Image (cartoon, rainbow, N blue to C red; front, top):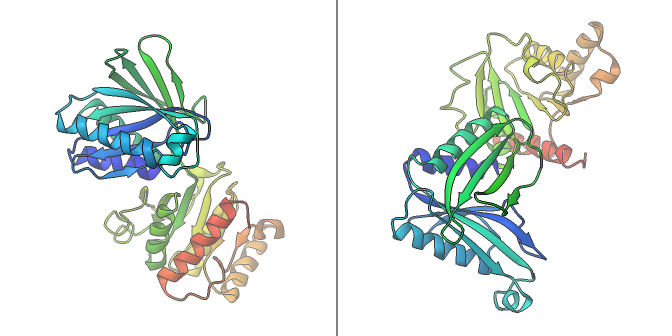
Length: 330
């Protein structure tokens, strides 16, 4: 969902109109559940999905009609697609039940565009929130407002309330696990890129602004220039879902960041380097009072043993290990 929100925010920033399609209710064995989303663009292309097949084709056609007719910002349609076994068979889909979808026209500078720009900013910062959409009008529905409530959502799934006018759709937007990459060198660049592709919230941190910048890390959610590596993990000290990758420019910096990382509750801590370097760092930390149990939390040498040597290959092995840990398969 993070990638979808970012793409929608990109359309909003570019001043491009689109129709936002959201599954608000589903029943039976449908291909997508409530909350699935798709954006229909003026050229007929889409990103996101509401399940493909019959439902998606109808939503695309209806969205294109709204765009072609010059629909006003907030103009909406509620569409129900009956995915009976007969219809499913005709569209090569093995499913039954039904989908209710909300189609909303999003004009440049409109309320929907503004809301998704704000959501993108919150997800980049790791702030959970709920998007509350109000729909009035019954047979001629219109979206009359989007409100964003920051804080942990009351529900992990969307809640659509049909009773009353306006109808209300409350959608949770929960940031994915955060990956903190310390060091902004070559390995870091590709690690951030691959990690963003597979859904991590990526934060790159370094004490050199000529390395830690948006030009080098366009895919990262945040790029932070530190005054030093002292206290570099304070912002996520109690986050038990955090991932830490240590790829700084030198052994001393790696050692200091590892010391800071082991004082956190991070789910994963990994450090690049050879076994010889790793053992030197470990001996230094043990001498400073860290326990063997602390040391055992660190994955080093970092990454899956794929045999890669280039920064790109090393990034793939690192992110492969992150996926393994995230999935509980390590």
